[in-house]
Length: 232
Length: 295
Image 1 (cartoon, one colour):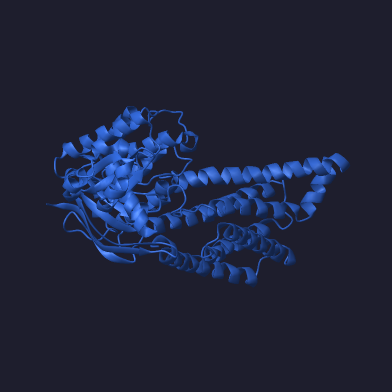
Image 2 (image 1 turned 30 degrees about the vertical axis):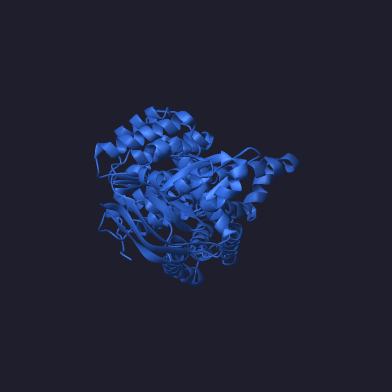
């Protein structure tokens, strides 16, 4: 079969499939995820504050891992929403996408664009959370270390979840995605807690592993998708 | 005669259904109807021809020379539209236009806006736009058709384009078929599937009948109308006429069915009347025969 090269850019491929360019995708997802984080913490302050007052609630939240956990959970939900985007033949638009120029190459570019959007979302969102922490509004228990560790493990989870794309059942795949994100997210937070936020060799190894796992799993996922679902 | 598509032994195997081997021709310059009951294999064949589904074996030759459906040359020449959910349901006309422009080299926004007006849809440039999910099935199909017809293609392949349209929209679709074909006389072709040919009869030049994953008959409508006759008579003569007929429906007082034209003289001897069948009557007769043979 002829390998048809797509002339579209990553961002154009994403726009063809979703109606949004990478920039628009990030501009929509980062503020929503960040606002969800802020709203969760505000709600938690109110709930705990009803009993002991806002100051006590604030102390309890910032001295425990609550802010760190919410940072991870809201980010996980943001990523999971993007990762549930599927373009199967049986779903609306699925047949249309298979007839557009570039064919599978355009699909590959769109998938790469989605990965770029997800990684950008994690980096920008966690940077925003760090700023909120740094200015003292909602301090994290392990500050910068917690942010970096969570980002590394969530991006690694994106790579691991690329393997989950090989699961055909939608429900099983979504549940696996969420499970992997939460497990990796919790490891990220706890590993920062263990070293009191001073990241070391373990996190360096994990960061290097992430750089390798994400592109390899992405490539394997695409090969499997083409063989089992695109051409079938 | 030049063919828009020549289908040479295409086969597609699923766990519970096998299409083909299909041998058929889609003549260039005409509108071809793919007629068959639900589950006959029309959608599978269309999907294979448009590269939406891979084939198990066989080959299709497009425009006399091209065989690689996964090439942009062919993708740009073929305007494909599925029967339902062609676009994501949260899309609006504006997003559709943006996506079509990125997905094909020959999408014309001005023509899309004009077709939206003809199909009585909203303006694609309007600020407030409805998502597809909020449209009726008929308006969804109008949107899909406006999008695919706004491309400068050489072959339209439409899966059940008339099934969800009201009679007026179906009439407009027939007009658009004629306009599409006459814009470049003899160079453009249409292939559309249907299980109810009555409303699209005026727009059909060539017919391919499918049953149980096989092509059971094909030809120009005018030729088919010479090949077959519609026979009817009193029910008391039904038993005598039946052996010479392809398919027959008998009620208390009369019978009606399709027979080969070569049996016309024989059938008239049983006090029957014969006439030229409509495409709808032909379809019922031919498909019923296939159904009986399959049982």
